[in-house]
Length: 468
Image 1: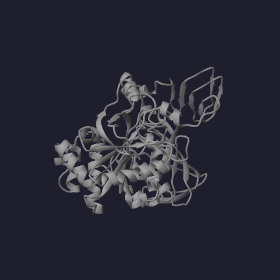
Image 2: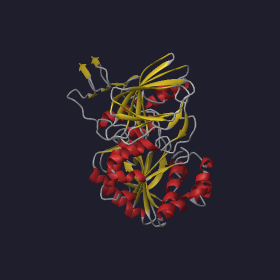
Image 3: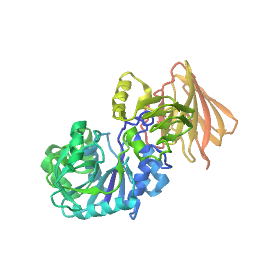
Image 4: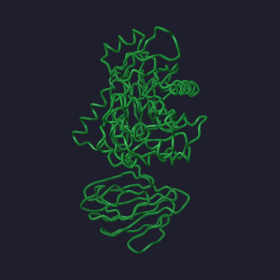
């Protein structure tokens, strides 16, 4: 069995921690590992890294790579980059074409497709369900996994199944879109519905047959070799695999998860899976509460104090604060859309911005100046670049930097500084074995991240105006 992990989504429902530049799959929620890292570990149990591939896009490629290298260095070479960010159907088509052409998979090979950002209570039972699915999929079925609903949830899709004959695998009657609360209550009461986990398995042969039958246009666009598909990828419809195939097929079976599964997609579901104190509060960070019950409070740097509150969600980051009522967290997505229309940059990125070479954090900014803390990972280097509108001052606070300014190359050590004039080509490298930290002070009439002309880049980013 081959595993395809989809890691290119832009989550908005966990704002303000999740941002477009750093979405949910990369978050570490009360755990030392991110949701992506936990998913990867789950699938590596009893499998070689060559059995797992991760599909993402250019925006998240280096975030995925840096996180999976911590778990399994070999997996960093198993990342498939979509030519353009799209929904799940084109992503899966592209990944399958890649696996068939690059790894020579036969059409009888069973493939399991999984998102990268969910939580399960039992790895052992999860593996048992995966093993069952592999056997059923090998017989020509598409297998999906259902979660027995324990409450009416309007944020999940549902699967109606035939329960007339108790079994470990059930035939699907219908897929149902996210319902109203009234319908969700009926589904839970009937006992005939499962939540759709969005994880499914099939043989490659079955997938192409079903796609040809239910999505002939997409199937036709996917013909030819990988090079042709790559060149035509922008023309593929931006659609989900649920809409294109799963909701139409009559060849689907459900294996129930008999353990707790959550997509941890809202602050309410985060609250459900977190450990709670004796007042049923989830508290992360520098948090102090008095007479506060049944609340989720997540802090960053500041002290957060609550008195006499109940059923609250409070989430604080360096540049944003969200306060809401438990049970209303599905509305965060709409809130983010409103903020985006207003042009609030807080919906796009954090003050800390991750790059292939490390990260930078904006410490202070004002008219004609900006101050950053920059961390460059060992053996990493920024692009050779130039700015039209700003000069830069660098002060090394830890490690040693190899600095190129024009034709001059020199080492800059801790507590030393160097000046980069406006319009001069320059580059920072960390040749050492410890992280390089420096303070950068930018001065100029325009300090936007797009004021960069890139001449050379070891990460293959286009030599153009783009973030450094």
